[in-house]
Length: 259
Ligand code: HXC
Image (cartoon, rainbow, N blue to C red; front, side, top):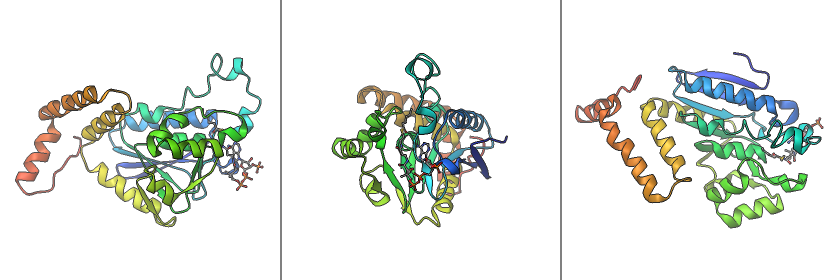
């Protein structure tokens, strides 16, 4: 399927979704968010895909929600009662398959909020993260005040949110916002290699891990551990566990195809 604001690339069981509004620094508008949802739900249901990589261009992941579109929004028509900005932003959290975010260049405002919904982030050395919404007169609206402090701690998060300071890839890695950093020239190649490694694992277990880790932010610890243990117990009724444990004992590489 062709999208107006996204590019799709296939790499075996890995699919890459690129945010693609180059003239507007990949500003996230309603159409792009609808298309992103469409693509994510389609790949979530596609047995040929195990892992999704979400990225932008070499220069920008996304410079936030589309300020040109939002400038004339009114409360009644475009925010809560009307078109409800934000309603189509959380598809990454709602799908089951892992989504790896790969960030090169600017990752700001809604762009950073979208990136933080990914299961983990890989950054290029030129990445810059920030929440500059205060400068355009609004509070972040897609989890910036919630996911950023959980990712990097309150003090750093408040610093970014109040001052609009951007952090580079090294500081993002040091603070735990991103998991790995690579040179800009090789970041996509490295990310696809990582994604393909995950795609060789049992997709059913990858889904369960994503679900459990996301519960860590919603549930009390004791409940979340019980939640995890139910998946662990249920795992003994699955082909993935039979294949994984037999392969280990037989000293061969497991084949998790379709598991
Ligand atoms: C619309 C944007 C945009 C944005 C950049 N552009 N960011 N258009 N919405 N968020 C457009 C510019 O208007 C310009 O268009 C073109 O992209 C190139 O941008 P420049 O500013 O000329 O580039 P540069 O000088 O390199 O600066 C890059 C930048 C800067 C640092 C990323 O563009 C910037 O600060 N952008 C805004 C960041 C921001 O405030 N984000 C938060 C938005 S609020 P023309 O036509 O002039 O070439 C938000 C709320 C989320 O995200 C709510 C979620 C529900």
